[in-house]
Image (cartoon, rainbow, N blue to C red; front, side):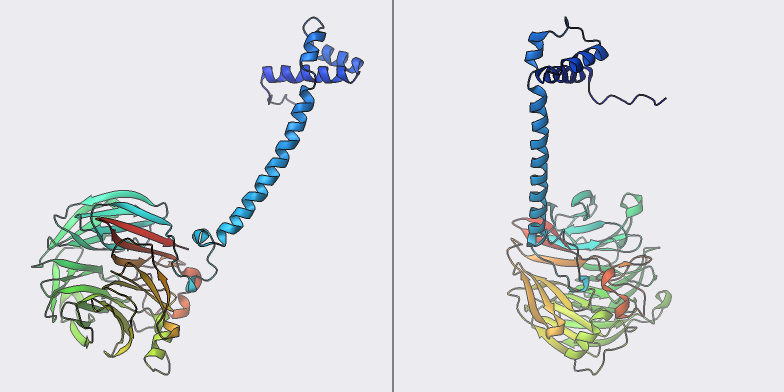
Length: 462
């Protein structure tokens, strides 16, 4: 015998339905059927007489027609939703919802997916965690904030610096920050972002800090004391001080294989350094090239990924691209002279990109290699197409209310995890351009800016 099913209607609803059925059968002159139903329900005439029957007359028909009308309305609403979804996905508002068909050609578009607010003063730097959906932002308000960029939510605020925090960078295990207080702090994300070490040794403002890829456990910093310093993050000791710049070193960036550094600053020079002879902190860091051409202080520098070599080699007049195993073939720099300069590894300026109306603050190469992204104090983000001799093909205007100070690309997704490299590129030496496949590119960019007196982080995602 089948077990009784759980009743859907409450006792009161069931009683209303039974009386409506009896009323309907009576109105249709189906008296025998109505009487049989009364008997089955143990509902005598005295409990439900003729006057009560009239009270429920027409109720069943009304309920039935209401259900039909509601079904029709649901179908109409579903069709409207489908139409609106199609319109949304075809508009700029739906760019963050639309699947990216060609990640190698994706460029950030307005509006941003999230605008993250909380810093009381301008943003100076942003950095993506190589594994988790965390984004760190540094600010002149002396704090570092950690956000969940996928959800657009603040996770925590890190306090410890006593003056403006000028740069942040994630390694595989740690977060590093540097400040005008002349210190570098190391934070452990796996231990609640505990400040596990403070590195001191610079004699002036520390303006830039980067982890050196390749498993060396090294960190490089740049300072207004005109030097670069290399640090062992395990011990906290400075293993090498690199001199050569004659003025404030404002920016430093390592190559994806960890062998090379490019640095630049207020002496308007761009310097290429070879770290291959520094094993264990011994040996020298050789300056392999000094590049001159900018006409004002330089603010940012970055190596080009191997995926960009086919485009940059044509700009350099080379017959074929360099080997992808070489990580220091091309570089880009931005300056207060409003220019972006592209350089080859031999120190030649192969292209000058003009278009910004104010200081160029930040640069990042598209992981697909075809584009260079820049941000500046003219309140714009610009996209330069290297396959069209560096033509500016997109400008985001009206997004920012103030100076745009920094830009980063999220790390690539690769088969065995996330890339721990620079500017979204894998850190494994010898990666070929075609191995940085479009399907691996994470179409996410973060920028930092000052809007009014406050700092804001914006996330653009495909």
